[in-house]
Structure formats: C-alpha cells, structure tokens
Image (tube, rainbow, N blue to C red):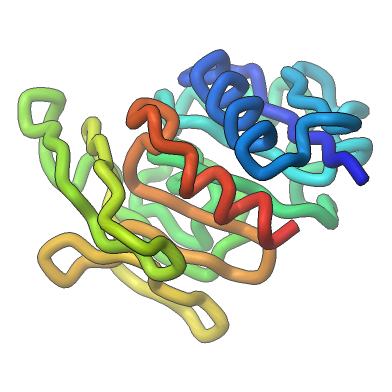
Length: 193
C-alpha cells in the first residue's frame, strides 16, 4: 500500500526533499502506489500520510503558514511531520523569538541559529538512534533543542545538545538530511508512518 508525502511548498528546500523522499520510497520498495507532492493549499494537507516542513527561514515559513490558512489543518493533521532546520523551529512548543509563531506539535523548546551564523555552518558524522552507522549531517545556521518534554525521544546530539528528536509519528531535525545524498533518515520517518 502506497503513501502520500506532501512537502510544504512555502519556502526552503522543497525540491531537495521531493527528490530525497522519492529515492527513499524506491529504496524501501514503496515507490509503486506512492506519491510525493508539493503542498501549496491547506485543503491538500488531510489527504497526505506524511508532511515535510523543510528548512528555510522560520519567520517567513510561520507567516506563510498563517497567510495560506494552513495552521488549523497542520495542528489537526493525523499523519507524521518531518521537520528539518527551520521546520523544526516551526514545530516547537516554544521559540524565544516573537517573530516565529510556532505550531507546538513537538514538546520541545528551540533556539534559532544556536550554532552561529551562516559562516559557522558545519558538517558532522552523527550517530543517530535507529541507524546502523553514522549519518553525514549538514548543519546550516542550525537551531538547537534547549528543552525536551516527556514523550520526546532524543535520537542524536551534538556536544550534548539534542539535534534529532521523535515524538509519535513526528521527526524533528536541526540539520538538512536532504542535502546528504543519504536517505536513511527519510526512510526512518517513513517506517514510523
């Protein structure tokens, strides 16, 4: 049975996630009957099994969610959400920045640009719970998770700070797995749907 993955096409790494999820579905033997689509309208959300809130600029993404009347459908969504970098910020319960109106779908607090500015971006081979070997993670102006609530599982840390978490069907990442060429994290999300 296929799955439908919708990538919020508001801002950020949309095409990269579409390509990574198509590759992940093929590698998992799920491509036939499955679909990866761009989501530009709120009414597309309930028809998806999983959604992606990609990296980009969190203040812009949160404003466009409201402008496109997606907040209610996202808060009520029954499937899993795969949130990367800015998407993680938008999913958090608390973000100490009044310009970001987060969804509160992950019981975490997040600090924007916690690792520094663009010039402080870095890559690291990251052990991730559920993967058999380290994942080459790309951190670009990455946020860090400053608080993890009950029911949130920490999957990876950098210098003791959580950078990958799972809560129910939702997966939140400080980094950009769609830029690595390795679809194991995308497949990890698919396995939880």
